[in-house]
Length: 226
Length: 226
DNA sequence: TTAATAGTGTCTGTTAGACAGTATGGG
DNA sequence: CCCATACTGTCTAACAGACACTATTAA
Image 1 (tube, each protein chain N blue to C red):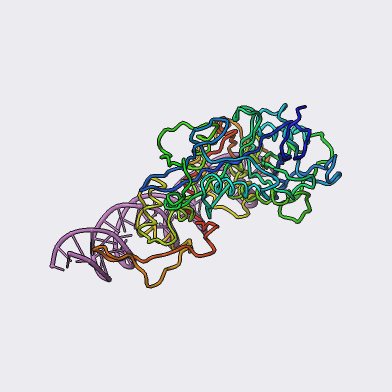
Image 2: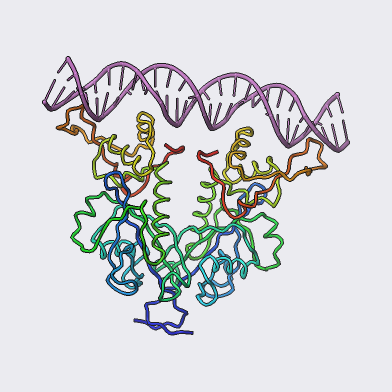
């Protein structure tokens, strides 16, 4: 450990991990295991470790992994806040990220003290985590209008009706079916999973799709929105 | 000065100050006056001073003021990068901002060693400043499609033909005149400066407008783009 | 066959944009 | 008068979205 002579700035990373439960957007919270705010549910966060993390993104990935045992294919930086009051320990900077995963990724983890909170219901969170959640939701809803972002809330394969329900749940408004399909086609991010179809239901089976490889970690964009 | 025992992270802020010179988008560079890269032209930047800056935004404002003598009404955070290699002094974080001002604000400053560089021409910049410039230009061009952002490149008052030329210069494509005016009207961010008009030219004078107070530091948005 | 949902097509109102026409200044 | 540029209106093509029609499965 090196000693440096600077005014101290605490550098932390916080992650808003979101998922869809039914048609409700949820954010994953973790019970804190140390000061400040021990035992309080909060966004998973941690201090940047220069010796361990090659980049800030790696800090965010390590936080998700160590606090929740989750690896998210999609992780995007939100905003950085820094001031003297947001952390009781003193002047601090928080670089916030958001991530999207299908519900089962969160349900499968064996990590304890994790819970999901409805982003549209009131909750009390420590630090400025409430503002981060609101930013994450706003960013997600906005980008959903013109990108493939909500696909990361679906599983590896899905049908177009399922995908439309996901878009509608995220944005909170119904979309026109044929128009929605034209727009998805226009983005060109999906490939058919040939031969397969949903089965067992008393109706016509749906074609199954998955994201093309090029769009697993990048977004497809529309010139004009949905 | 307090001594702390943490692995050191150097926290810095860099600002991409942009303006229009004719129809060319320029970024303001300042000759560095200390290590590393002394005498090299770079984005104005500085280290966060917890004792002096109440927030990160204040650091950005202080940097613009102290390096260039400029105060910008519009200042927006771009992105934060942190890794072990971008600064030769070690693991560092750079929070980047971009700002927009009319050309005369930069020309009026008496600060030395400032120059404007065409953002579309090749330039060599230290650290990862080239990436920051590219992000700033991309963000500006993108937001120009659906917001009042380019208004901050105009002076306090301007005519609609002038404003259209600014939008076209920023985005690099011509816009339809009557449609452009409908969209500007739709944003509702302008108010007429009554009685005044451009004069002296051998043609019909144009109505002069200015930004409504509510939009001097905030953006007006369009549901659909221009 | 019916019920249920998938997928496609048709039609209509709205919007983007080309272009022309009118307005208003100076010379 | 003419010229130049500001401003407005008209027309067309493209698009968003409502709605209905066809397709395909299980029972």
